[in-house]
Image (cartoon, helix red, strand yellow):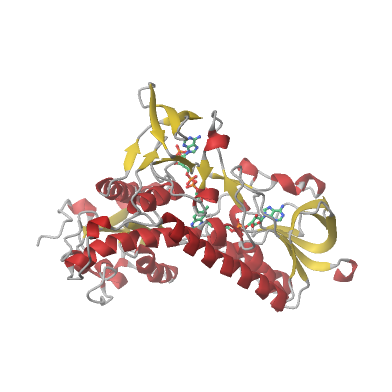
Length: 486
Ligand code: FAD
Ligand code: NA7
């Protein structure tokens, strides 16, 4: 019986996945404790309860993206007749923006804490680790240990940014862990890494008025549809973001005036250098499993410290894992939350539903956003064969772009389908404004196995950008020009 343990469930990590599971479990009558502890970044940045998304991820990222979009909107507003005194003099106050973002985060930290209290989840602000398979100890700030026993344990410790192994990286570089609370404006910034975090940060920094350069080691946005990626990059370049392709940083040194001298190896193997005020690493993330002393519980890890857990169950049956610690699962907040809730229902409500990790929609919040769900064209070709898929695509012109004469040459979308029959939709890709809002509903349609025929029989909402998905008709195979002919 569970009476031999203090808790029915102990959760390691109070982030998206851990908190969702903990709250669901207590609602179902389980006795739950959550350990959450933030180890400061190499630059000394730390934050409160709630995990990556709330403190150093989705939320501050989206708010800074929004700040950048608003800057653009001021200039558009002038074209619509708003009388803006000296629009050229408009600039962002970094400290004020950051303060606003951090105030919001603090309020979320507080609400989260109160919610745990009202739901009777025991919150322990300590770095947890396994003493044995059912015993968790937590090292608290005062150096003391709190020890609890648990029938079930959920590992939801998430991940943290990698640093490259080059001189000066740890001393002078920053990561997304530091950027959103940086006390002074970043100025001219080098972003190393071309995953979605690197692109998003470079995009909003440029939009806020800072000189931003992305250093790409190989390809941009690996894993995403490469036609769409090209469009995203073209638009970033249009807006002023610089790209250094096929290059790797070699060293960072601090100069007397405080600026950072970066040496890097270019695509021809030559050493180049440039000076930046800020160097931001966005070169991927590692799972935070090292501190957990998993060997005391017998839990195995694979590449990058991640846990390979079928149906969120590790190799030790009563020890589970959700979120960014999972091997080969999308590192996204709603994925962690959904998996956490379903797990709690299986553990404490005899439910059987398991997490479906396929066709999870996502959006890259670059200046022109890129939203997608399902397979990229490359993946569809790989899984189905080129002859068995049909790709429909089109450029489109958002109504709201005309008056301010915004460049619409990179507003583009693509639907990847099976070629036979009613043409089941395999993937949907959209570059343009509000991409996340556009894609979300179509993700539900894809859950219902929507066909291209059904998409085409859907009546659009006019004038929107989402309706363009109901109008697309040119197949790539036809070779017809996908640019609107008006
Ligand atoms: P986390 O939220 O990381 O929570 C883990 C918690 O456990 C942390 O608080 C950590 O400090 C704590 N912890 C670690 N070890 C221990 C220990 N031993 N004891 C106690 N506590 C411990 N996702 C989206 O869906 N949309 C986005 O737009 C998006 N943008 C992002 C932008 C950035 C810059 C980043 C970095 C991430 C972004 N993500 C986004 C990803 C999203 O933040 C993660 O997928 C999500 O937070 C993962 O949740 P989790 O529960 O696995 O872990
Ligand atoms: P990603 O999506 O893993 O991207 C990392 C990027 O950084 C990618 O472009 C890599 O290039 C590049 N990279 C990796 N290591 C290096 C080094 N040492 N030097 C230069 N460039 C490098 O990570 P993000 O930081 O965007 O984090 C997003 C996470 O959330 C990620 O794990 C996703 O799964 C979700 P590459 O293509 O490997 O040549």
